[in-house]
Image 1: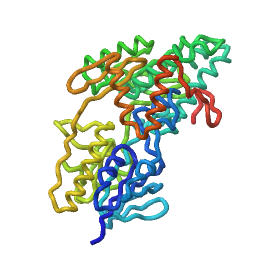
Image 2 (image 1 turned 135 degrees about the vertical axis):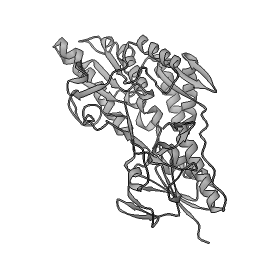
Image 3 (image 1 turned 90 degrees about the horizontal axis):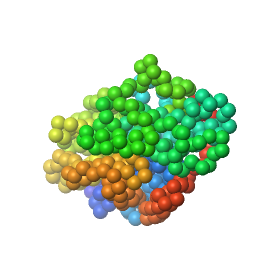
Image 4 (image 1 turned 90 degrees about the vertical axis):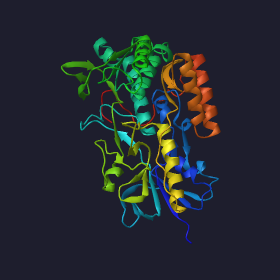
Length: 418
């Protein structure tokens, strides 16, 4: 009998978890990704704010699967999928499959507005390096700016979106000015930096409880962040952000307000939600094709009357569940419904400050931050990455310094599009 071929599109949390779950199975596994590395996205904001280098949170996919004899990796991009022929059309070829796991994740969404050139999002290493370049370039431009009004505009940073990414970015940006580079400039005081966090909902961190949201807002304000809730952005341009008729002059605007599913989901021809996430069955398969599974940020599955959130633990658990259901199909068994086990969530705000809920208990302050630190170290791929990040964080904590403050790539002036 031929060995079943399982193709996994995407080398993120969901894709790698699925591949690892099949390591002892009598199948061949091909994992396809347009990048050669797995990215630890929860720490991507630390690259954007000069706390870590890209290599500290990324790891080659081939190295992850080095000892898995039944797995191979292809550096390729999937253009479309022919479900009837069980064939994936790549940019430079084709790939047949017996079972398919689609884990291509999500990207940022601007809700139909052309704002990306003025307000970059944060999903890839390239995004993080662009944000880092803009942030550090703003300080450099402020050093030589003679006009006080223009200098204030250069030192104003606006973060749109009060979810975990937005909160983490805003807290880190404030710490850069007030702690990291406080004594590095001569023409202005970096501690005069203004950071504005804009959230359309009534509170920051909407997925968290109202009490934790309140504590997060208090912690942000203690760092000097100006928190604006119940505020909808109506325009973004080279001069800053508009909230209705009010304009906030800022030369650096960062986007953390919305996500959109990978375009591949809509190409399947199966039902999707407004964000492009694929509506899956309880066992994570798609309508009419029990051999195809959609997992991670690309899937839409209700649990307890609410959509399961697009976070790393969901991606990991759903990837493993899809792999196990494939093995059950191969062995002629009934597939099992996926049930997400929520072990808790944590969001860091700044130096030794975080909020979260773990095992049903709400935490805040130093204890929540320390648990956040332990969890993120544990989930990093590779011993070297864990060691480097631990040392970097220790240095940052005790020396009030960030070791990745490099302006790299092509030149750019604050307020100019990419």
